[in-house]
Image 1 (cartoon, rainbow, N blue to C red):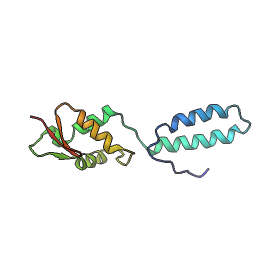
Image 2 (cartoon, one colour):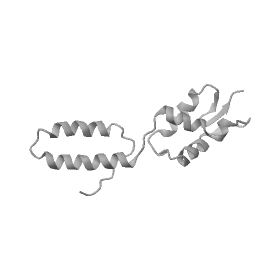
Image 3 (cartoon, one colour):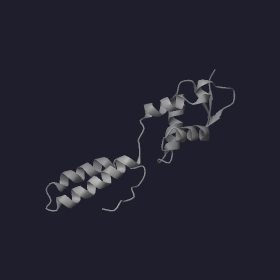
Image 4 (cartoon, rainbow, N blue to C red):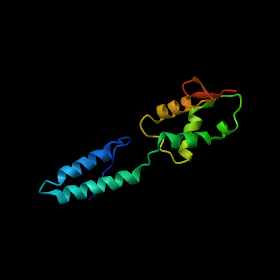
Length: 121
């Protein structure tokens, strides 16, 4: 089968595929359906890596600014570039909002405005 381009950011796609697999067990043409679904599932699993919030926080904490903060604020674009360098898919849907929420939840970080943060002293 030809490769099918998959949409980005659909995390529930795997559960939907599993439900379709269960439904296809009863159909008469289940061999084609299973082959098609297996192809989509392998493409999906190979195409993206989903990071949990705890993993993202650990990666963000390893940023040089958070290890040795200065009086100037850090911008979100710097953090996003760092995450991209570390292999995180920053083009994922609403990744900037997710990173903003995670950084704002850190205990010693002060949010100056959207996309600018400073370490509290």
